[in-house]
Amino acid sequence: MKKILLVILLSMFCFANMEFSDPKPTFDNPRKVVYSLHTGDLKKINSIIGSMYNILKEYPSESLKIVVVAYGKGLRTLRKDFDKATILRIKSLMQYDVEFIGCKNTMDSMHWKKEDFLDGVDFVQAGIAEIIEKKVAGYIGIDAY
Image 1: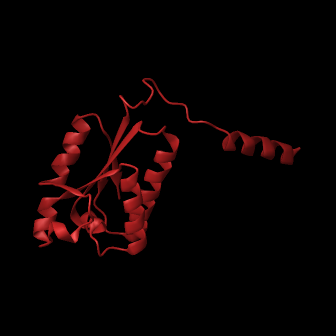
Image 2: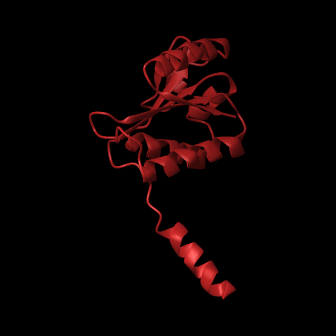
Image 3: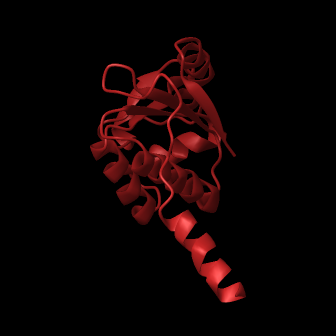
C-alpha cells in the first residue's frame, strides 16, 4: 500500500503543470524579472544561472523577460576571462534573450574596459540605480547572493 501511495504522489509531481496567475504571461504582457548579481562566488553564480534556466523552462516562449544586473564582485562574472564553463552557460542564456547589464562604476573602479567583457553585455552608470528603475518599471527583483 505504501508503494502505491508513493507511486501516486510521484506521478502527481511529475505531471504537475504550472498554473499562471492572471493576467497570464503573453508576448505582449510578459513576466519581468531582474536579478541583482553582486556575488563573486562561483558556486552561487552557477546556482543563480540554474534558477534562470528553471524559470525559462516554465514559461511559454517570449512570455518571460529576464534581466541580470551585475555590479561589485558580480561584474567579474561577465568578463571574458571568467570560468569557461560558466561563460558558456551565460552565452546560452543570451541566446534565450536574457539581458546582461554591467555597472560602469564598478568597471571604472576596477580599471576594466568594455573590451574585457562578453559581447552582448550592456552597461549603465550605476547598477543599483538600474535595479531600482527596473523594479519601478514592474520587474520582480531577485537578489542573487
